[in-house]
Image (cartoon, rainbow, N blue to C red; front, side, top):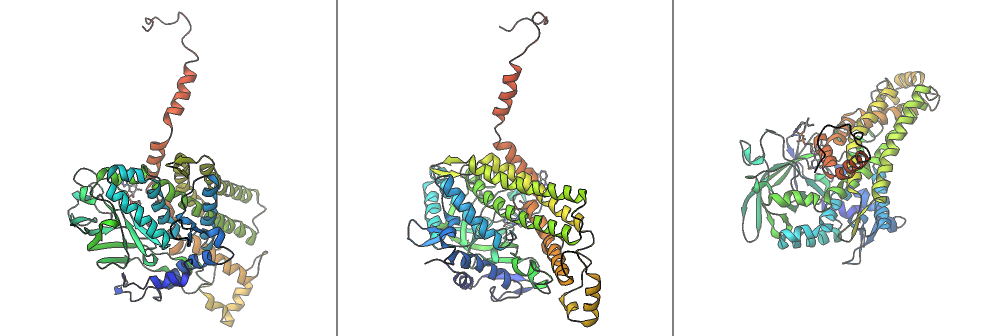
Length: 493
Ligand SMILES: Cc1cc2nc3c(=O)[nH]c(=O)nc-3n(C[C@H](O)[C@H](O)[C@H](O)COP(=O)(O)OP(=O)(O)OC[C@H]3O[C@@H](n4cnc5c(N)ncnc54)[C@H](O)[C@@H]3O)c2cc1C
């Protein structure tokens, strides 16, 4: 048996608490603010369950013998790593790379934790046992998880415990024989509304005194006391699929999450008031590498889509033969290929880690740094190529239904490459990708989902082989010296 979209959508009817526009959502699967995004979530599972895809998209759980998403696979060699990536690539293509927190993202985090089990074990065997058993449970039920690992913005000059309200940031407020109780907020639960469970953890720096904030746990989204405060729904605001082809389908949602004294059992707690492990869980395992490898794969797919948009704009406006336009497109193609090349490189230079085969860490860090500037550059180049084309469009599909406006559309929406309907359809797609509220949110997402630049560049600094490059310089400098007799300094002892 393999999970289907219908099963996933049914599983979201679990009494979850979501608020939007001042109202409580009765059923996320049918609510106009979320229904299409939820259907997209289901489409991932239908795709992997289709007979023609099942071999590529799933693998056999070593525990149950059932097929589950390859996102849960722990590759042992380069071939398995590439096979898993190809499955992730196909999932990303279903949404043109527009769903960032698809089910393979947090599955990759948990896989990274699982591969780093010895780090948890050395620290606290009971917490390691929780990681191990939860991983099996999540994999064998092919769960969709979201995560919140960032503290809500407030006074950035103070750490979690130094905020005027000690319960702003989610922390452990109680513990007993059964588990921990948490209170406070985290941001941002992207895809939380359509996930089964959520991983709550911390990536922000912590300091002595912040122990209560240093925890990692998982819990079902439907848990009593857990509230998702959704941002505005772009899919609900979109007038039609013709006008907003991406907003209407792929608005994965982002939400602030609030825990009102929520109890979590010990077998769902991976880190408990432990400043050291709160950091080590990311970097002494391969969680950070593996989750961001998934992000870069998804980004590569999205950039291919944007590159297609850029090329089509040039053809539709017949600017393709201008040398400057070809130069721009050549530069964009190189930037997109660069991200693809980094994926191939991090696999080819992959590392053995506790018996598993994982992408190369420093190349992953490189890809993250480069990706953060590549996306805004490509988005800006599309705006440059488009000029006013994405704005010079009828207000909505309804203008095609009114004879007067249809006549003007036919006269004014001209292209050497397509008819007036094709031109409007394309320009509206390009605007939804780049300029609509949905498109604009994507720019913010790509700039920040993996942390601000000082974090990604800090990791690049941290994991780079500085000894190698310094040694290179030192070795070269050892090949020459002051000319003999030129120095008045006494010779070194
Ligand atoms: C669309 C979107 C979706 C997201 N989805 C998720 C998700 O699914 N799960 C999740 O956990 N998080 C998610 N996030 C949160 C994301 O991880 C954070 O936005 C990111 O880590 C940056 O943290 P911040 O927003 O607090 O920005 P800040 O840390 O406040 O950074 C903002 C700016 O402040 C300045 N700054 C702040 N601190 C420093 C410093 N110490 N030194 C120098 N400059 C500084 C820099 O100019 C920086 O660019 C999402 C964010 C967005 C925008």
